[in-house]
Image 1 (cartoon, rainbow, N blue to C red):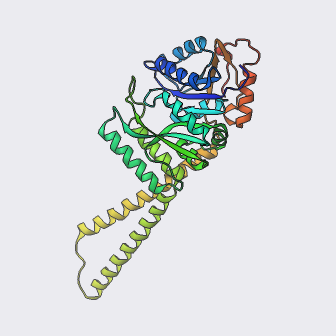
Image 2: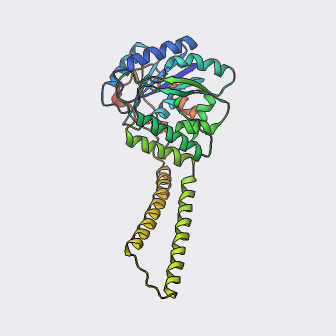
Image 3: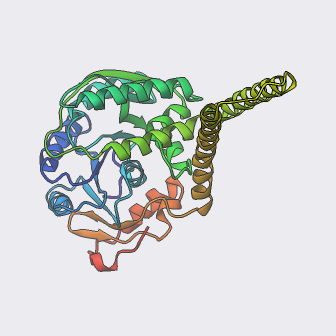
Length: 351
């Protein structure tokens, strides 16, 4: 299939064997309603430890529109999404999770909005079913803090569920960040971006792939990618601390001139501890930014593909596939399947 489809659906998958077939059925039905057979469904296996890849392989053999991408290891949701977007060729690209919390059928409402000139149509959650009070409260706090800190306007209560034009996807893929926050990066691109309010469903099956540790790391990536305000806060804390320390020094000197002995070992230790804590906080904030600069400077591949599958054919991709331009990636994908000769999965290369 060398002719570019009109629609690509990209779904990162990590241990989604229980609901993957149902997701594929619903996503394919929605795509067929708006694009006929001129669509592709890209399922990215992000280092799953269950039978996710076996199901993707079976689906790819049964449906010619299914393209399976298997990553060499677990890279995380944002990089798995980037790998799927890199493999997409459609003029319009829907990014959606495979857990069916975001209904694929909303594609039928997104397409008319894009027909009216939108560059991006993103889902904005009005209600979230099946999530704990802690998840809801922490998500609300995160989005509101991000909207205050970020240098660009990032809509509240949104995920990565969105329909994008090809030019937006190409610009997104040209952005070289390794610590990616896709919804913020798309907002940074600009253009006409329209919200589609919807009620988010509970997971069809399985458990969340975002425990507390990953939620915190994701929040740090988002804030440090789109705001330098924490660095300014560190500066303000340092200046306030210096002012308080100077006031204490003046107070101590005046008491000494008056011949009064300065007492209060506990209060002195409390002040020292407070200043030390502020210093450590400031160093930690600076360290978060410095650590990200170090990771970016290494220029390691953004993701590594073990194999890519369409039908019964395993394709071989160039080693530097993840670092290619968007146009070169599409050319490499077309060339990979052009011969029509099945290749062994053992001969596939890292890309």
